[in-house]
Length: 519
Image (tube, rainbow, N blue to C red):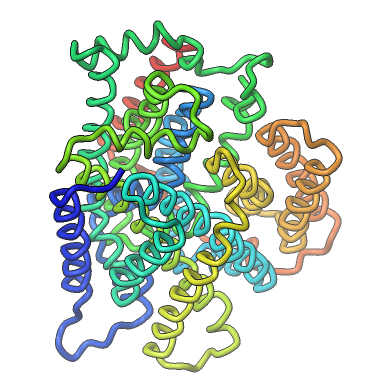
């Protein structure tokens, strides 16, 4: 299906408008030259609404909209556990993790690891993150985005890749994090409006025009198996979401790794005006997370009713988009592309931040601020090129790209979570223990994948997490302490505002009711 002239006009207006706004917010005052703090941390100018919106925009991209809709089509509402448990995780991160990071005024997560351990740990983790961001995250966003453009607009996948890469570079390369974060506000508004309209339209269609509620009730009656939050072992998709173990086990490891220690997510909070602004932004993002399944999962379940028998489940969301009338299709299409380019901009900025501040500046320590900003821009651009080349070979044959992302980031996540949790809350953890967890995470994951390929990847992550925990503790106790910093890190203030605590309780209650209802 091709876009109408009206749809194309709306989409072009969005593209041009976003680039213009990004350019305007990126302008510096006369006489001020953009430095690393401006480029990588938005000059520590972000307010709570910008932080919250940008967190969601960075997270909700093609792999979320298309990938989670595809998983909704295949396995149902259970996949929404990723969204709802993420809301709880965000509140924990805001209260217990964020104060530690902001107290030490860091640019990157690897930088914190050097202050806590040593440079070797910082370097190893910097290389890990750059590899994962380029070959898992960037490639998946580009591939799924180009797939959507191909389905809706009839554009060849190759040209879709080129367009997305060029668009992301055009609006984010010059301004850095500031351009990304402030334009993310527009992206999220567009995403929510477009996503809710799509859900409304599909549910109304299922009810034959009798309304959204009737459509939802009809959907629960005609496809009750799609509304199981906890999958049983006889479910064909149990390997993707292994029942109760997913709820109480490895999903939390994934979430702490993603929301707590993931550079391209936490970088927004590091750029906050204050700890209070950062925590309010985290709370805002948690509230938005509660409603995200309506936008990213429900359409996939609806597509199961409207388009049974699709070749691949990831075709669900693009197929639904073809049902939209002229004008609204352009808006929904713009919302999808908004989510894609926002994540691309966020990821490339974080890749450039880690490379420039954790690797390049160590070997070239006396260069000018202008030089480091230039290196950051070159790295951002290069990462996009590499990801565009690697996208099809890595993802072309996957049915559910969202599961691909979760599985292969899971090779590193258990070790990362162990390193940070022990580093923040157990003073006796040593650099040798941290490196043992990092290396053990990858090695153990590969061994499980090769020798026990049938085990669900979330169960595998559980096993690997405890292996890494044991390795880190034993190594720290056995190997002589290599850094005095394990005893000199200052304690943070974990006090939060009353409003923050109220939001946390409200989020927990709402999510508990959802699980009780569809257990």
